[in-house]
Image 1 (cartoon, one colour):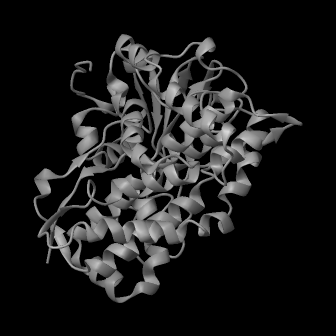
Image 2: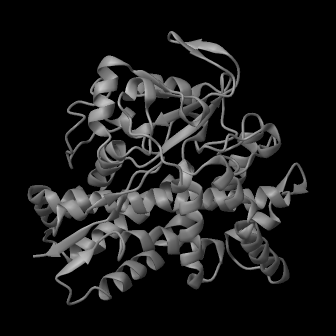
Length: 403
C-alpha cells in the first residue's frame, strides 16, 4: 500500500482513504458544504468532489459531460483499452447510453419484486443460522459474525455458486473496493494475477455444462439484439454484483446495528413497534448510505466555476447528498418514523441501483431477525469499532454486548 500523507485541507487535497475521513466523514462534508461545495484534489491523478445534494444530482443525471466507464477511483488510472466500450468492466453500471439502457433492461426481470421475494426465506433462515452461532455469547461482533455474511451468501446463492466460496468473494471485494490507495504498480499486479477472471470462467463453464435455475444461467441464456451476451459482459455483470450487491448491503446492515447499539430509545421503539420497520429501513439507508460512486469527466467543461478536464475523476458522494439540510429537514438526525424520504442511497439518474429491492429485503430481514433475538444491546467498546476505507462506507468491526 502507498503511504499517503495525511490531509490538511479537504477542500484542496481531499482523500477518501484518509483516516479522518474513514473515522467520521460527516463533519468534513458539512464543512465543505458551507465553505467549498465542490472540492478538488491532485491525488489519484486529479479528482473533484461535490457535496451538495443538487450538485450531486446534476452530475448523476449528466451523461454528456460525465462517463460511467469506470466507477472506482484508484491510483491506477485506466486507459481507453482498459475500459472497453460500450460494455465497460461491470455492465450496466459501467456502461454509457445508449448501450446502458439495453444492458439494464436485460437484468430488470431478475431483480423485480417477485423473484427477490423468493429469496426471503433463504435470507431469513441464514440470519437465524448466524444468530444461532452466537448463542451464549455476551459480546458479539455484529459485523464479522452477522452483517458481513448475509448479502455475501445471498449473492453466492443467486449466482448458483458454492456457499463455501463466500470467503473467496470476500477477498475479491477487498481488492476491488478497499485497496484503492495501493500504488498503480501494485494495483496492476493484483489485477494481472487473473484469479478473479479464472474463478468466474470456471463457474461459467460449470453452468454451460449443467444449466441451473440461477442468475448465472440466466445471463448465459440472455440475448441482446438476438445475440448471446459476450463472455466479458457475463463476467462483468458478476463483478457488478460483487461491487454493488455485497459490500454495500453488509455495510448498511452493520451501520444500522451500530446506530441501534448507541441509541436505546430507537432500539426500544424498533423492538416494540415493528410497524416502524419500513420507515426505519429507509431512514437508515438515508442517514448511513454506504455508496459513493465515481465518474470520469468526458470532456473539458466548467462546472459551477470548476474547470474540469477530460479524464479527471469525480466522486459522487450520495451519503453527503443525503445529509444536506437543504434537501432533508434535520438531515443530521435519524428519525425512524421519517415518512417523506426521497433519499439517494441507491443513487440518482440512469444508474440508480437496480438491486434496490434486494438490498431493502436483506436489510429489513436482517434487522427483524436480530431484534427478535437480541432486542437490547449496546456497544461493548466504541473505540473498537472500525470502518472501511474507500467508496463504500460501513463498519468492519462492531463489538456489541447483549444486555
